[in-house]
Length: 347
Image 1 (cartoon, one colour):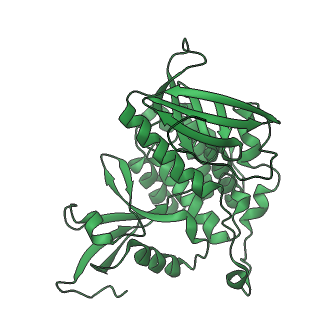
Image 2 (tube, one colour; image 1 turned 120 degrees about the horizontal axis):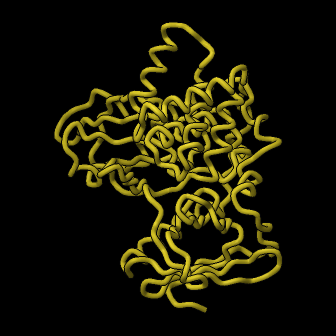
Image 3 (cartoon, one colour; image 1 turned 90 degrees about the vertical axis):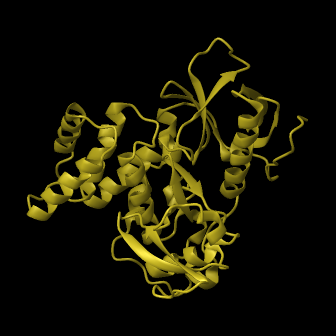
């Protein structure tokens, strides 16, 4: 795909990358979105392709393109210069599942972006800690002019900030003095995954089992389905624990298999239309997370090992274990059968 092709069959667009830079591309109108993704992944030498996609922004909402469909009809309604973004559409529930350094680094950049844009469900204290990890990973101990410029740029782009919040970040950053940059990257990923979500806001719900509980919300997340009360995690249904799911009118229901026992959960959303949309969103991510995304042996063979092995930082502490610090419950599904996703009527 050449950058400088123009004509009635081509359209010039802008693509925002995870490092904050923007590149120009000309797309062939009949081409599919997956072709542009493949072009970008080839540029970064990424072979773990399943996690990545393209999106445009609509009121801070990320609208992910269907990679199987033509790209131009999905973005033609945008104003010039037709700005879209490259990013990780899916985040692994555990970074140790990733096999390549470059994928881990792109994951760090994606979560860095999510922290700056305030897309994670965190307290102010938690978010300040994540910001401190970002600055430490980017060379906070340096006093060079280039670092000071980067430091200033970070706070300029930091959304929903204040002088008090920035002071808290710098206080936490001081406590991280001496931490290795790659370790700071790993800590950011580990602390972010349990509180990451795939939509801009969690969905307000009412628990049928405990209708008196207030301020409950449901999020579709890398770990699975996460239930919050205010910004505190009260329950996590891991992808491997969800046996099937469906909806009836405004009620979304889940069948959970945990520690050898079956349990059923029901949650009421604000409308039947929203409930159907959440169920479809859940189904899309469920299908992704229960599949194997390892690199095929033919592609993996002959790949050169990276000079810095970030993956070693995930051997002792992973988000799968760390989520226990948010909510303490059991193990994954013990059955050898595959989980099911069923239509809208409950079994």
